[in-house]
Image 1 (cartoon, rainbow, N blue to C red):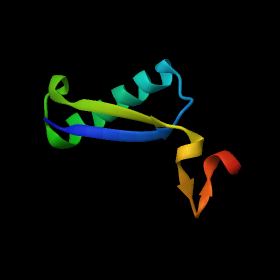
Image 2: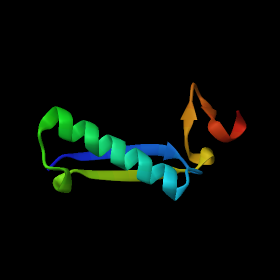
Image 3: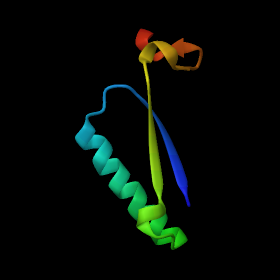
Image 4: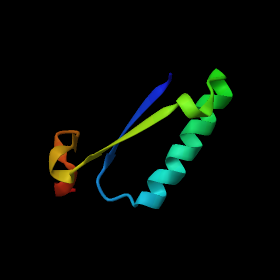
Length: 61
């Protein structure tokens, strides 16, 4: 059972996540042959105050 974890900055809508989950599921199915109903996509929303790149919080960019 493939599990895909997606970490994103908070703020994506439910509809955006549904679309991403569908496209990710399709891609994993296409390349692995796994049945779509066993492919799991987990979204982890992270606040801009809890994610940094290059030493700078996204909140401060």
